[in-house]
Length: 543
Image 1 (cartoon, rainbow, N blue to C red):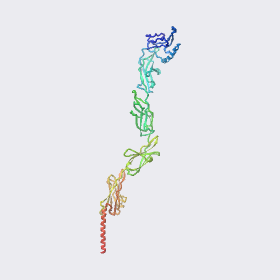
Image 2 (tube, rainbow, N blue to C red):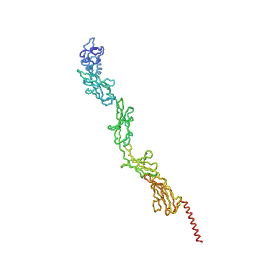
Image 3 (cartoon, rainbow, N blue to C red):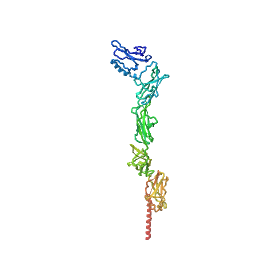
Image 4 (cartoon, one colour):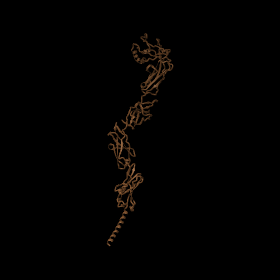
């Protein structure tokens, strides 16, 4: 050392060497247990060979220890083989020379992270800052990385500055320390190592699967769709989900539950591509997953509503009446199919017309009374495209009014001279507006018709439920078959009742059935006068 030989076991030098071998071993090692003020300098070595009891002059290798690249030119094969194995082990010393450090090293710096996480994801940027204490003079910084049980290694960084920027990845995960150094007396003096910081790196959670329900190529405005975000099986640590529209627009402002699903009614502006992701919470940090593969939603307006009409169009229908519903699509396209919807007392049901045409013919009855709508449709984009429903039409069905009763006054059918015969038509109920009609020989009698010589009272349109037919006694045209009927106003439509039973009037004042006793008495009385008259004529002429 500095041209002076180092004596083995010299404690004062704070350096000890192994005893030079006296056998066939051709290597000797100088051990430096701790850096100190007495072990700084230039080191050389040499060796002697014992040839017949004499020691030739030693062979001395000049140069510092870091120049071990110089080959010892030993003459025996064992020395050459040993150097062949030794040089690869000493190669790192040739690349990164270790400065000899005095015992009074500068104090340790502080190592910090700009963003401290309990775990990092691949690709995240991490900055380590090494801060020397004031007022230490610093020429440069070194950072050291240690992964697992491996020895620390120096991390190369530009300019030897105080900041080390990393991109987190599995290959650089581990524990980091740092130190600073300065040049002093033509040599490098290094500080103690800083505190350690850990940079664990974990994989980003795998992408979930985003699905649509119902799955379709094309959706119509107003339809509902359900988006479901499903993480990979076995990932139980999910904390929340989020859905994104193309270009990153968040469509669900609230944090969703573990169901990972959201429902919404579609509008035209909902067309686009959607993705989703989920978060997990390992080691105290919430970590987002990779985004799912996108799914596409295409939305358009349904075809405009058709027009539904009735023929005939009544406010109310009678059982047995025929009614035709016609569904008319706008425009000139002819390849549409049609369906009708019926809503009675229960849930709506579909009524299919023959050949899915635009006309539906019904026979009105209580069982099909209700509200009807219609729509037109066709197959497009692997689904059924249906128009909006038409406005509804109503088909109420009611029974006709009950049959009226026809009566004569007086009930005996016997009338005094000059007193007319009255025939009365009575409806069995008072339901509001009613109109009465009288018929003679099945032809309607018009009120006030002088030619018929019969005068009927004006049919009433108020709440009274009777009407009277007056037959003058001196009328020469008052015989025949009489009946009556009436109409009720139901929702603006006049509904006719069945006709009453007929009453037959014969002669001037003869009424069959109900006037039978009065006619019999008339015949008997007439016969009496006729017989007495004949007797009177015979007795007068002959005697």
